Length: 296
Image (cartoon, rainbow, N blue to C red; front, side):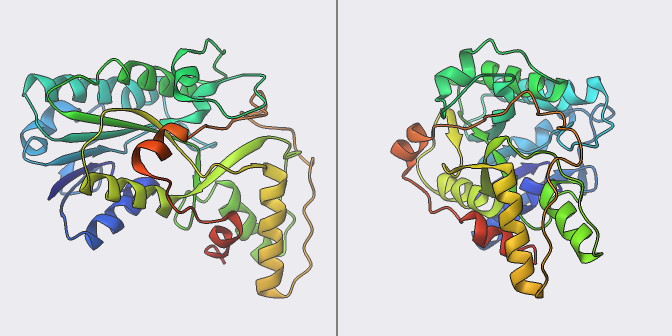
């Protein structure tokens, strides 16, 4: 099996790459640092087409504006998150591609809301909630427009993900930040942590994708997440618990030291994954406590 991995140096891309190696697939790595370079806007997706068409599966992991401290421009965020993957879909159709495309959305595209329970794909694709930032808006439009590009010459599987975590993620994300501060015996600056979220271990997402490409190809938008919903402060407390157990320390979190950040208008975000579990089977998810141990 030949697989093209666009955005192979990303957090998710690296996890998928590791699993593809176990599958003994022929992997075409594409990123700003790979031998086959993809560097939007200087080197757009159109230049990759001759190489992409020779692959059985194409996985688009490139994204911008993901990290809380990003300095990505509006052009880059909409370009990588919305317009470039849509252009890829159109080019593959023009070339009568016969393989499988896998792309990704985000539950942050649910935007500002008053939700109290997990939502299905129809809600995510049709809601009119205000978007608090460009990243959320760019992901909303790609997921929504992806749903219009399913009856093509190729199979297109679009997976909407929740918070993915694990070793190797950006150092400014929550859990790497906690570890770095506690290792220095510092007190991390934390928000109230009242937001409710789903956390999915990155290797579980990679496992699902690799198992999926070995089976029958599927079209459609599907939610994929560890279904458990937890408060962010609960996830922080669990990290402290695991850290203290491992190191024999007695650190305690100090919630509310800083104001809530860019997702403060989204107190509750959760996906109903019934459609994916019915279609593909329910994956085995790593518990948050077990996942957090891998940072230590």
